[in-house]
Image (tube, rainbow, N blue to C red):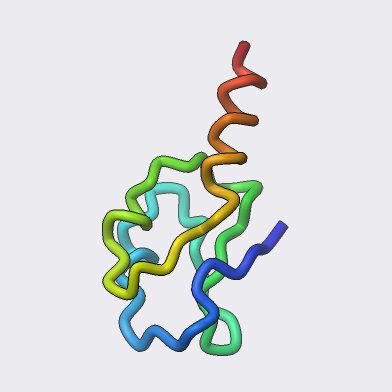
Length: 69
């Protein structure tokens, strides 16, 4: 599932190159994350210069930890 994590235009999205899963992409001048690829490491959050946040990252992280048992 693709979720918008930054609805504002970001000309140089620093979050994209730091994502080890390759889950971040640009679409119509918005930064999006593929939640199926993302494993919520938080590197995009640390690299973001506009303080945009993926509000579902914590939820995905908890879901993945629960699935691992």
